[in-house]
Amino acid sequence: MLDDAARELEAAVDMDPKNTGARGRLAVVRLKSGDLEGAVRDLEIMEGAGAKGQAMLTNKAVALQRAGRFEEALVAVDGAERAAPGDPRVLLTRGIIELKAKDPAAAWKTFEAYRTSLGDETPPAVYFAYAILAAGMIGEFPLALGLGREGLAAHPDHPAILVNMGSVLDRGDETDAARSLFERAASLIPCPPQAEKNLGDLAYRGGDHERARGHYEKAIKLSPNLGDDVYLKLGNLAYNDGDTDWAQRLWGRARELNPQNEVVKTNLELLASLD
Image (tube, rainbow, N blue to C red; front, side, top):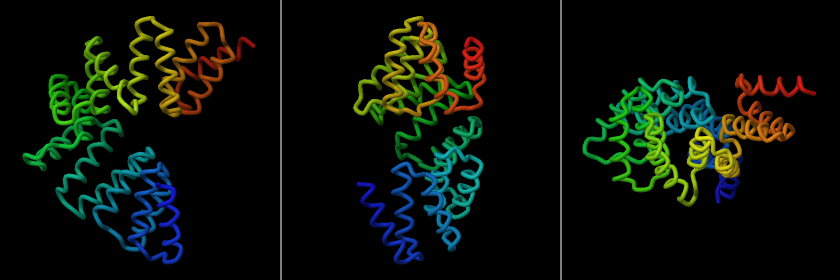
C-alpha cells in the first residue's frame, strides 16, 4: 500500500511544509517504492530546513547510492557518521556504498569495522551478502566462502547470499558448486533475477545456447533493467541464429542501459554496415 501511504503523506506535507516527520516518512516510502530522486528531494528539503540527524542522512546516502550517485552518497554518509560516530547502521551503509563505487578494499575495511561494532550480535543478511563480494573481489576467497557458510547458517536460503557466494565460487572455477547455489536461489519465491542471469552465463560459457537463452529471458522478465550484459548476450544469440532484426533490438536495449559498452557499439556498427 505504498501508493496510498505516499498520497496521505504528500497531503500532510502540502498542508504543513514544515512537518519534517511526515516528510521523513514520505522519503522512506518513496525509497521503498523506487522513487529515488523523489526520496532525495524530500531529504534535501529536510536537510535545508536544519535536519541533521543520523537517520535522515543515512536514508539520503542509501537513496543516492541506489541512484548511482556514489560520491554524493559518501558525503551524506560522512555527515551521518559525524552525527552518530561508530553507529553500526552507518558503517554498514558506508561499506555498501564503497563496494558499489568499485572500491572493494575500502569496503572490506569498513565491513570489518562494522562487524567489530556488533560485538557478539549476529549480523543481518545484507552484511553477509555484500561482505562475501568484498572479500572475493580483494582475492580473499577462503574468507569469502567462510562468510557465505556463516551467512547461510544464520539466514538459510537467503537469495543474495546464495547468489553472491555462487559468484565467488564461479570466479574460483568451482562451476558445479556455483551452479548448485544459483539453482537453489532460482527455486525461491520470488526468484532473484541475478540467479537466472548467472545460470544463463554458465550455460552460455558452456556452449548450451538454448539453455542460456531460457535463463536470460527469465531474468529480464523478472527485471527488465537487469543490465546491459544480458541484452548483449541475448543479442549475440539472436545474431548467431540469423535474426539480425531481433539482435539489433536487443543490442539497442543494451546501449540504452550502458551507452559506454564498446562491444555493443561495435556490434551495432557492424549491423549498420551490412544494410
